[in-house]
Length: 74
Image (cartoon, rainbow, N blue to C red; front, side, top):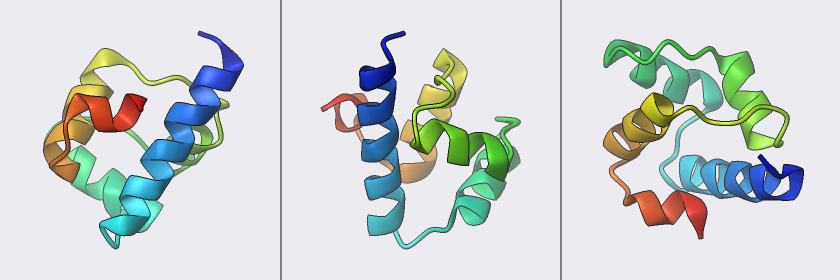
């Protein structure tokens, strides 16, 4: 995946998370509750573009954050 694209998706995720009033720790805990095994550290790497998202993580983020898929990729 293109680094600049990963960075843009990560920035969108960070913005959405903050607008929802969640810390990285809180979001990772919510994801883990629904079966998405993601740590706070992994979430931090995603937000700065150092790690890409897997399809199951995208689906879990959509569910937990109550967003559309498009919101992550705009």
